[in-house]
Image (cartoon, rainbow, N blue to C red; front, side, top):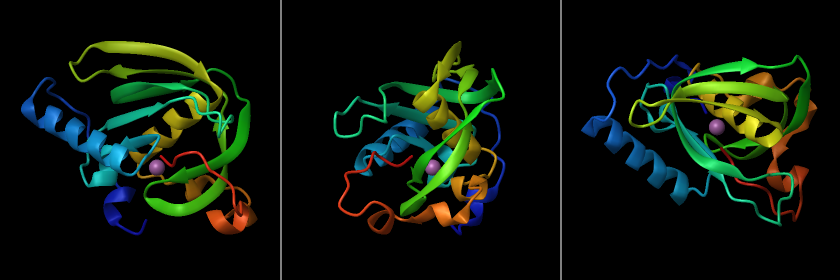
Length: 170
Ligand code: NI
């Protein structure tokens, strides 16, 4: 946070199946695995393209974080299916060591392309919908602290949740 590249609007990918896209995805997967993240957007590694990856395995240590399939989502389109929003805690690899309470749409349809340019669409809710909204915000230069409604609900992990095992950041 503080790097201007995180505040820019990323450009659509126009060519699929290229070595550049493959190299970008490999770099993103490595970064996400190394940082033990739930998701990552290309701008977080300084690349202004509309590419996100995410995926969370169910873990009994954090029951609030349901399983989300490993996904590559390029040029995403998000469409909330209802006006209702939930507030829940989020962290971000670009804002390490912190958590904030963030409102997100509960029900969401999203579509986009995979790494081969194949279009797909999913209807999701809850934690899966939250992760997608968080990642796709990165493509429009939005970091989760910009969405916090009550700044008293923003702080360091060890102050907010002393001694707790927290779900991965994204
Ligand atoms: Ni993030």
